[in-house]
Structures are given as structure tokens and as C-alpha cells.
Amino acid sequence: MVIAIDCRMINSSGIGVYLRGILPIMLKSEHEFLLVGNRGNLSSFAKNKNVKIITCNISPFSVKELLVFPLKITREINKTAVYYSPYFNIPCGITVPVFTTIHDIIFPDIPEMTSKTGLAARMFLYRRAYKKSYAVFTVSEFSKTRIEANLGTAKPVIVTHSGIQPMFPEYRNKRHNINKKKTIVFIGNIKKHKGLELLIDAFQLAKKEGLPHQLVIMGEKDNFRSADRAVLQKIENPEAKSISFTGFISDKQLMEYLSQASLLVQPSFYEGFGLPPLEAMTLGTKALVSDIPVFREIYSDFPVSFFRSGDCIDLKNKMTELLLNQPVPVITLPQRLLKRYTFEKTTALIMHNLLTINQKLQ
Image 1 (spheres, helix red, strand yellow):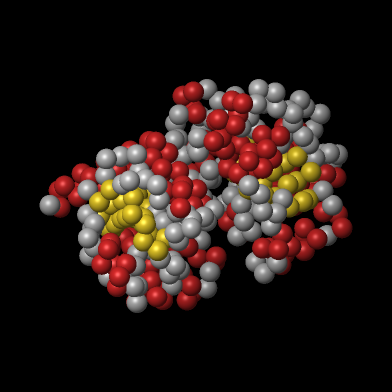
Image 2 (cartoon, rainbow, N blue to C red; image 1 turned 90 degrees about the horizontal axis):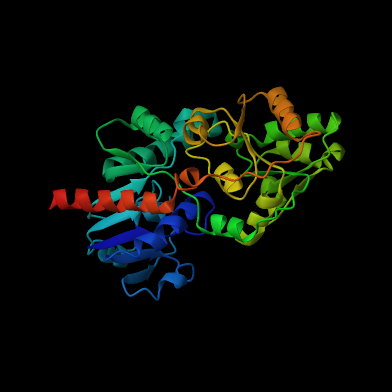
């Protein structure tokens, strides 16, 4: 069977991590693959004998994608058996069975994140993807319930969790002695649902109580200037000297920061899965996360600490309780937890359903 895969977002943060996790495992199968995307970004897969790459630089969710997607590309896609998109964007003109992964459905759940026009546009795209898909994959039971609540139950919604990339346990296994630094790390962006403003407020309160740590934000400060002035002003406040940005960093640098940190804080108000706590714990670092439903689902058996979502004082108290005048623990996850969320499991579920449903359609 020939499977077409939309790889245009392979270098993005969230979707890209998911795609980079499943794609190498997919390509080990006996099937053939048509990878659609930037040829340079996909060059590492070009040597695979079962891979054909077709160049496509049309932006996801663009007007061109929806209305005038190149006929040359759709002809190649329509020669395959199925088309898989790791997000809810589907180009026009595709006639083979389509499968998508909808990681979350945050916009109707938190409509204040966008304008009424923006919400209407996104709902059109969500509904379009749902209608065109023979099955929808998602990354948690929480996301599944929200997709069904917002889009219906006519199509199968199949949970295929996100996973930990092999380089994280490999990095941890090579470093038996981890020297912890007085740093608290945050991985994410400035969008309100990530809770960065809450973390900054709680961190500054903790500093006033004597917390000696630095807050390290994994990201580039320049990306924050047009996104949220309130957060930017707090970061640029003279009292925020203990807050720093990493700028762009490699995967190796990310793992170094995470493994050496005293604590990772994930203060999200909403997530589809929320991968950074798993990455941190795999590398030996304690995670403090908000008690939102998806984190309770994903991390209930893991050695995380929870704080009340949206509660600045509780977050401050939990940070000081874990870090102030306390030895910093090095987390070691047991094998049963290390193997709970893997891209091998994710890929196996996706491939099984692609093949099973495609056989039923024939």
C-alpha cells in the first residue's frame, strides 16, 4: 500500500515533534510512502527505497491550500491508497481516503483566544477536516471527548497518544551523574492557555520569599513582542532580572537545560497532551503541573506535583515547598512509565487503523 503523508509542518514545534516521532517508524514498514513537503526538510528520508518526496511549499491553512492546491501534487496524492495529515488541514482536490490527527480543539473550548471571525474560520476548518476524514486520531481521552462534543460522534475518534523521542532516554542513560542547577524551566509559547503570565507572577512572589532560582523560558524573546504586551512588560520589569530566555536551541541544548534544571513548571490552562513534563521526568527532572483534566489523565501515575490551575498563590507555594531549603531530587522513571507513551505505540495504532479501515473501504 502507498501512503501519502503531509510533512509540511515537520519543523514546527508541537506538530513537528509528533511527525518526527512517528515518521521514521512508519518508514520501517513494508509499505511505500509519498512524503509531501519541503525537500530540504525531508532530505534525511530520501535514501529510503520506499520513499518518494514531492516538493510542496504551499502553507498549511492558506487560501492556496483550500482553493488552488497544485494539480500536479494532488494527482500524485490521488495515486496513493490513503492520505494522512498530522493536523486538521486538508488540501483541496484529494479524492483518496483521508485520515487526520486533531491534537486538540482549543478554540471552541476557549473562544476568547481569538475573534468571532477567527473562531468561525477555525470551526470551518475543524468541521471540514472531520467531514473529510474517514477516522480522526487524537492524543488523549480528554481531546477525544472534546472533539466529540464539538464535532459529533459520526466518525471514529481514536486515541493515539503523543510519545517520548528515543533521544531523551538515550541522553539520560549516558549521564549517570546529573549536576542540578538552581533553575526552573518553562517550555511553551506566550499564548494565554500556556499560563506563562501566571508562572511569572508566582515566580516573582517566590523570589520575595527567598527562592534563589532563575526562571529559564525556552524560546526567543523577540517572538513575544507582538503577542502579549502584559507578559512582555512583566518580563522587562526591573524586578524580572531572574528571568531569561534561551533563544533558539538545539535538541541537545534542550536536553541539557532540562536535565540540569531543578524543576519544570507546566502551568497550562488547556492542552491536548502536554509533552514537556514527560520529557523533563525522562531526563531526571521533577515536574510541577496544573491540575487540568488532561494532566490528571496523562500523569496521574507519574511522580509529578499538581497545583490548582489558575491559582498563583498555590503555584508559588508549591514551588517554594519543592525547592526552598530542600535537596533537589533526581527523578528516575521505572520502565513501565518510560514505555507508557512511546512513538512506537502511537505509530502502530495509526498504521493499524489506516490499513484496517482502508481494507474495509475496498
